[in-house]
Image 1 (cartoon, rainbow, N blue to C red):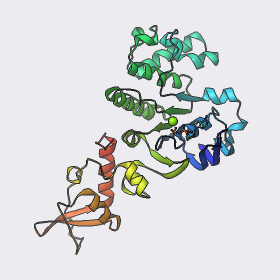
Image 2: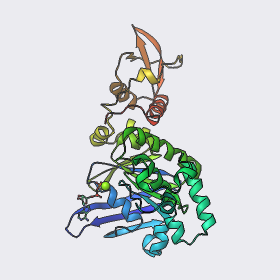
Image 3: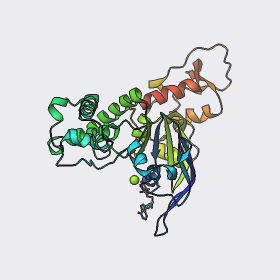
Image 4: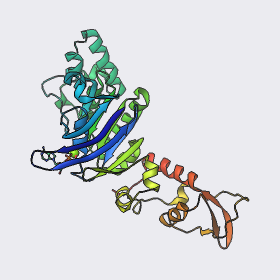
Length: 316
Ligand code: ADP
Ligand code: MG
């Protein structure tokens, strides 16, 4: 578990980037930090592996403050992926992937096997790619190598700072899918920074929305969608703009036990329906004066979350 306790970061010029942050990131969790530019996402991420030191408060991993870890141990045990593809241009793909295993003095055989295994994992044929140079790969392929390089020494934690934002939409979606597959198989703790809400909703087990160095709300994607804590969250999540027609995701079901005196019209738009449902777990729907069925809040939320997870169209 990664834990932030009252963590504050003030830079030398007086900018307070992170203010008394409290966070708990669980083992095996895909945790997304999101928020407008300058809200402190990168600072938060870099404090985890001590690329940036805290001004006050404590970051701990598995109960031990990061200041008590050996710095090399910390860097090697935490994978790190940047937005800019940062492969070494003169080294082969295999050498790039093996940087940390090399430092950890793995045997040649073990390293070679690991490189091939990882290339396989992201759909790059080892025989074709292991001896190429980064310049001979597309941007999407290079970033794929960036991701597996971070995984090479099998770290427990993976930090990713807008890793896909420089890619074209097609490669971005492909890498998101790959990463979800990888996460399902290897169950690392991933802390992922993005400013793209659609990406956050698709990837995150939980999403932490930040503003001005503080947490505004933490929750599952469906919690943020359906229970935004305030107007900022609502706007950021793009609820109003979400291109979703509830009729596409749910059909009212018959339920004779529900005797709702105030059915909503079938034509009611999603945002109004959600407002009504905030006060009622179940609501009846009428069409042409007849109640045609009911909608359960939990069902609607689940269907909406599924829709978003499957890459539903959110306003960007
Ligand atoms: P984000 O990643 O969410 O865009 P950052 O963590 O990079 O935000 O930055 C948070 C705030 O700290 C911003 O106001 C930024 O300008 C400031 N900042 C970042 N790095 C430094 C630095 N080295 N010195 C001074 N201010 C910085
Ligand atoms: Mg940043």
